[in-house]
Image (cartoon, one colour):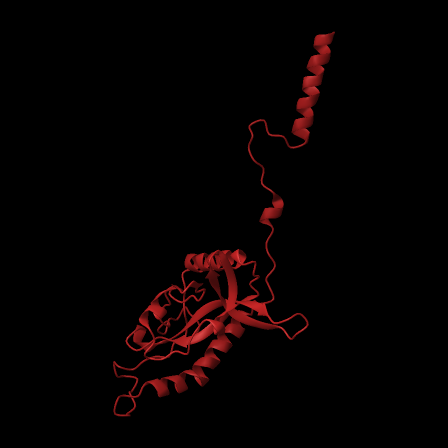
Length: 218
């Protein structure tokens, strides 16, 4: 009699395990919630709007840029069929893994100072003479909220300043000097200088604009 009761208990326990989704082989179950599609964020624009914006820039800004940069040493205009002719930068590509690594790095640095990154600012810039054909480019820098509570919000780019064992997020304006052709090369090439960790990102590297690629924006 006791044996029958014991077998009945085992069978009932096994039935309950199967009913609750138990897997005797230990195979993990997937969660349906993990496969739910994400809704498009508000920042997404239509493909046609993107094409219109790109085309508008090409018609209204590119001719002005190329006219201003294509001047030889004698002050004469360089024609488009001349090999010296410089095209305006129309697009910049970055490696996706490099971008993720950059974002992970700035998040790690900001957490070390208990600073919340409020955004990512994109700065239009230009390479020096002799580098990348003196092309226009951009660099990235995280921004943080600044000012006292109650003031108008003022987001500023920041870097990490370390004194001893203490690290602080400091607005870049308090750490840089006015650029000049006589700038110290060490200041330009070292990401960490005088205890300051730069968070500006540029060397991804950027690719030149596509040359009349029919599969790209026109």
